[in-house]
Image 1: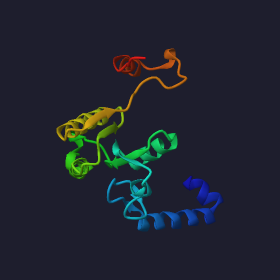
Image 2: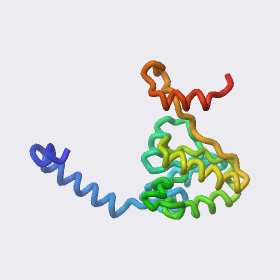
Image 3: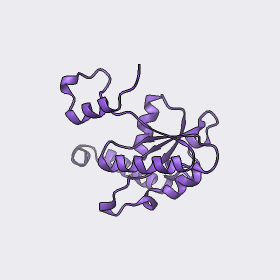
Image 4: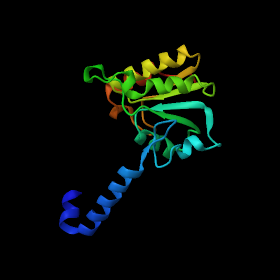
Length: 171
C-alpha cells in the first residue's frame, strides 16, 4: 500500500496520513469496556438497547467489530487489549483484569462469554477469566470452536476436528 500511494497517489497518501494523525489524537479507550472510542463511553456501552447482563470478553477491538458484523450478540463487551502470556511478561494486570473484576462485581453482569482466540495464550486467558467469573458467582461460557459452517471434514485440520468432537453438544 505504501509503495502504491508513494508511486501513484501522493494526495491519497497525504489524506491517509492526516486521517491517521487525527485518529491518534482523537481516539482513546472507552472508560467502561476499553474498546476504541472517540468519546468517553462508546456507543455500545451507552446503548440502552444492549443487554448489560451478558458480557463478552475479547482480546482486542477488532474482535468486537467481527462479533458486531455477525449481528448475533446484543450484550456488552470488555476488551482485554491482549492476552495472558507469562513468557512475554504479560500478566493479569497488563490486560485489565482488575477493571474486569470491578465490572463483574457491579451487579449487572450475570454471564461472561469468553471469546479469546484458540491459541495457547487465548485458552490460558479464557481459563483465567472463567475462574475470575466463577469466583464472583457468575456463569462463565466459552465461544464454540470447530468446523466452519459449510465446511467439509476432509479439509479440517486434526486439532480443530479433535476439539470439535470433544466439545460436541446435544441436538
